[in-house]
Image (cartoon, rainbow, N blue to C red; front, side, top):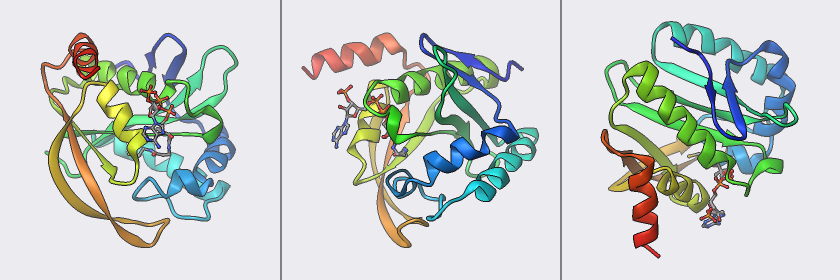
Length: 190
Ligand SMILES: CC(C)(COP(=O)(O)OP(=O)(O)OC[C@H]1O[C@@H](n2cnc3c(N)ncnc32)[C@H](O)[C@@H]1OP(=O)(O)O)[C@@H](O)C(=O)NCCC(=O)NCCS
């Protein structure tokens, strides 16, 4: 299995111990942590080191393939993106986070597309799910641009950083969805 992906501006590779300081800076930002379910706040280098250590075992069990997302032109670690399963046997789910300095340049969408293509090729992933907190329209837009559609499913998930249950909206990428299909849907929507 190829444990890397590549897009026009970004590269996905496995995390290294030395990435912990960058991850602590990214995930230590409360505006990143509050849009995820599991990142506590505050969040320091030791937490990031522990998180990186969990990847090996989860990958070995085949339940999580999370990549460091690197900007090719300067080697900056812009965030993480990957596919994971909430339970063995459940569908692949897309997750990502980017450091605040890297928002608004299409990187999350590009990384999402890279991970999806990787998952199709390397995991044989078919339909892929994703969930966003209802107060995260930027992430919902990323999913839309990557070809996901809202399932209309609403759930409640605990947000560790906010220490509160939050409304969550379900999205799904169909097994036969293509980037061309996503692009034409966006054109139709104006
Ligand atoms: C959400 C996040 C991944 C977006 O990353 P990004 O690289 O800025 O995303 P992109 O540039 O690819 O696309 C963002 C889209 O959202 C739109 N957007 C941004 N803020 C928005 C808002 N408040 N309301 C609606 N749309 C918004 C942008 O305009 C853009 O859409 P466009 O290309 O049609 O203009 C990033 O902000 C992040 O990591 N946030 C914290 C963690 C997080 O939310 N992770 C996802 C958990 S589900």
